[in-house]
Length: 201
Image (tube, rainbow, N blue to C red; front, side, top):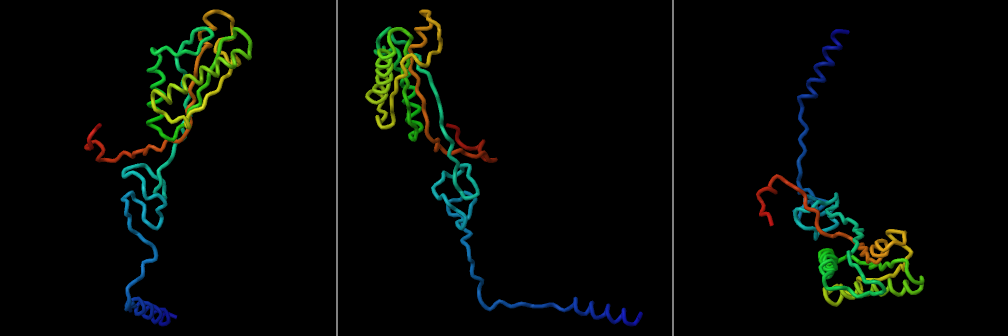
């Protein structure tokens, strides 16, 4: 038995000492393109988005993420009773909406007109629509926002801030709100160890 174990051990050791040598007569063909042409860390074989900004945060396929925009901004435009005239002192507030829409060119704006609860619903429906139209026209004609990106709707006095019938309530209920929706396609830049050395704008 002991002799058998010795012979078996010798055979195993002899087998381990042998080296199998494989020779390659032809070069290996690379199936997938492992280059990273746009230098975003994703190889060409996986890349789906080649136009992402260098340094932007991306997913596993080299695509930047699109964040939805859904903003509601009240314009502090105080209309006179039964009027849709916009005093030039309120133009800077409308310009804020225009600047935002220029920064995010994929956004659309719905301009909402609201009235106080004085007079008939029908009369205030027309008045609130005119107020929304006035802001929409100002955005288009004075601040250069494409009218195709704007829509206006009047709500009469159906959506009051203050439901009471005081003078103060009537004043705050005569208002316009801009609802901005769309996609933020601005590149979300990722931080790296060299960020501190880059020029701060």
